[in-house]
Image (cartoon, rainbow, N blue to C red):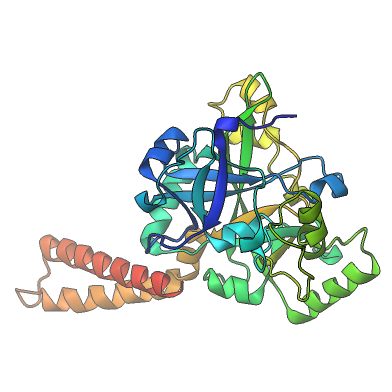
Length: 365
């Protein structure tokens, strides 16, 4: 069954050059190919993973959002009908379950690159968040620890929380691309949806316990590394150029995040239609509303609103100190402070506090 237009099919290679200063992961393509694929700032890379035939997964693909970059050195296909070759960051390849150790030995594979959009207020919030700084991290969705069920938070490894500049009880933004199909059932675009959740650290003891549970109860606590990186699946699909290598070490995967079923089902058609009322009923019916499972990749970043609230006390103290000092310094007529002097002191104190706040938050990531 064809799910994506053949015109959006691509071949992939490793990224050799990428833009700097952006808190996102990139696919790089030539300007001509970006236009041909009808891409804008954002796209979604899709991989029809060969393991899903064995796993009988309802949704036969993995998808992850990425920022689009232009690299004219990639050129264009010299043979008509040859898929566009795009360069893909390693993190994106890991998120899609593509083996890192043998990536250069793989050939073929069904990859699609489709346009994606961020809608309205979420896009505006993200643009504002870039002023204060953030870092996106790709993670793999896993089921929650039993005591965490129905508690409205997600567990994330401590080192990941530090990497995104989040402290426990701060909010995280979790993002996932949702496919939108037309009347013919063909998926031609994605919309990136987000969910806000409070974060709790997954400590070493918790992670050791989860590994034990995966070994003792493999059908309930599934192991994404074992299921996604089985070289035999890639071999059966004819994706190895040479003889299948023996797997000596576990393939590196993106970090886990642990959430309950209610959170994993947050990206539903009803939620999508409420948050994006501009889409038609026909488009909403085409949206892949399957709950996130243990193979689903997500992107997480800190909530700037939450970071601002955490830093509010220090910002308030800074503002008051600067305001008092400026009021005294601008007291041009001793013993009498005019309204103009107060207004000027307020303006300067606000600017100084904002600049220091931006520096503090950006330094955290």
